[in-house]
Length: 250
Length: 309
Image (cartoon, rainbow over all chains, first blue to last red; front, side, top):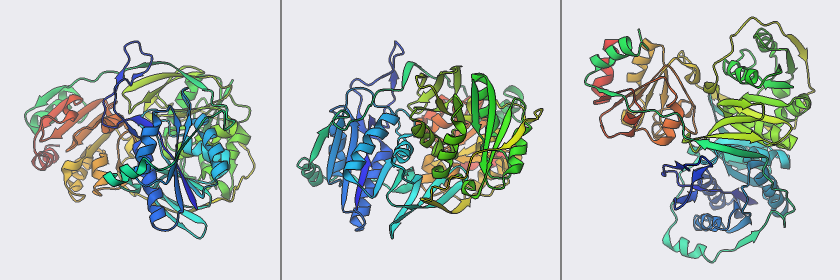
């Protein structure tokens, strides 16, 4: 069984992003980029499925500019067997990405597709579910555990009230939550090996997909500022301030 | 113009976040209908009908909707929602699960996690863990939108007398099954609806030490939350996580104990009215957003706080 893992190139999670002064977006010049953390968890899960003998091949796929090859190479170093870049210089929104991935899915016929639950840039959290809709597959979102047996996937989901377990027929879509696994680091030999693994490049046009944006960003502004208040010296002073100044406790 | 709001519920109780979503629907304008999809959920439908401003309640009551599996919910909402210009649900793990599936079936974009309505097609939403607030315009005829509860003050519960009608057929996709829920049981208020939240971080050192916070929480009528670090370390379960990828809270009072204040955590709580930070590291970033900071060892400060209340 093949496992397909879509990954996104995003700003590194530790970078404090800056908004462009003209409010047209986020300033990404010379900013460190990385594999979206949730996508890294997805790669790790796929590689573990392969190590457990459940998966036969792990394919990483990304949609974006040519520089996404860096992140695909990272995925290859982490254990993916081959990679596909669907290259487009226009902003690919979740619905467009889902359509592109459906075209890749139709060609590759994987048994499981593992997504990150959201990307830490757009924070949309849509692509996996949209892909599941377009392919008609079941979905196990926000997964904290995945086990695959007898043509079924049992997924434990992190939900607002606690945990929910669902059983999905294969092929299925899984989206990862933080505690599904702890991704490994790529070793130097594996980074070297990754350079020789296959990385195919195609385009939305070649796949016959209309990837036009459906919504537009009119502006991006900083959130309402919040400045540091005061330091109190003791618990007594804190309680006094909360009672008599902020008036939030009785 | 009309708006369909998909109710958040557990088959017996209408969850309060639905009232926040109804507030967003009210800002969009036009008739507002509510879809209650569940199993034996007529109490929920009645509660929804009693909310002021609701025109009609559409009730899809069938076993296939008992657990609101996305595979079954999506075709139902497509069937019921065809004639609506806007379809809204809460940006909770339930809404986040089925709503993108609905949008894709309609072949329209989804606008996630809105915190403001500029016009019927233009919305404000946080991006990059809340470090930017984007104004986004949807160019699709139909708008599928998830709503951040804390972004809108709830509409009053009551004063309405909407009709309740059965709607939609039973869609059982037959590709997914509910197995079980393991839901946290707590006498305390729910995190996202609590007036006061007290959260612990890595500095708590163990799950047992969260009992210190529970004592304070009981006195303040507070919910207890946690940072990702505390959840990852296994101190407390995932449903307590506050942050970019956990729960978003905006209580009157947020008390952060032993939490350093990573941007991902701040994204989940910085809209709180008053923020208190207790941390022994005076350089911790949490102090940059705290109204009242106390540099102290939490293991002495929290018991003192408990005594002082």
